[in-house]
Length: 271
Image (cartoon, rainbow, N blue to C red):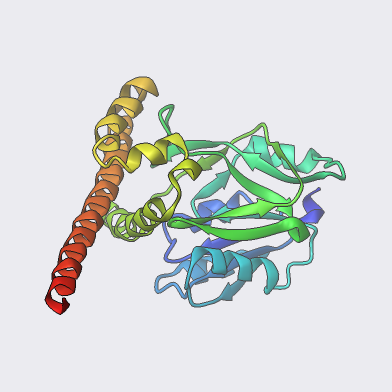
């Protein structure tokens, strides 16, 4: 199966992560790194791996970047393994991929994740399963809030072994990323029909629930209190993300309310 898979990785300033990710993929004949013109040493590190081919494209959206990587970079294998730069393939998953024998109707595989803080594996991670392996001709990327998801035409099965999510970029970088992500997520939540949203997103639209619920869920329901300082770090990080999203939603609500007031005043003035 290895000969039928090309790993595809998106990067932008991933020096703390990219070498670990690529090292776990030495089995791949070719890896395509889709870089958004990093201004650190990401490209140099990637090119130091003999099985890596780097393509650069100016970033406009996650969906478009993944679609370009999938369609326009010369990938010829029937299967693509789509990875973020902080996804580390475990030895168990490597062995599972080697032995995969997909049936004709199987067009994708979904992986679970073990969330890590600086290499420390957490029991409290809430990272959802993601379809990471799929038939190239059966996949289409769509924008989903701040990120993207792949729509696969056909059966999607579950992989047994997990992927490690281990982002080691700085907290400053995390705050900057969340400032962008929460703006996109707020737009998604307010534009969506309530019936189309999952439970967590419906709670987020209430604005005040998730920032209170998240630390309780991470620390006590998921057992993060037993993960030590890494567990508290993760719980506080997730709580901050929910708080920033709630602030975005409140900000938009106040802005829309102000616009409606001025619109009514303008209408009265014209009459």
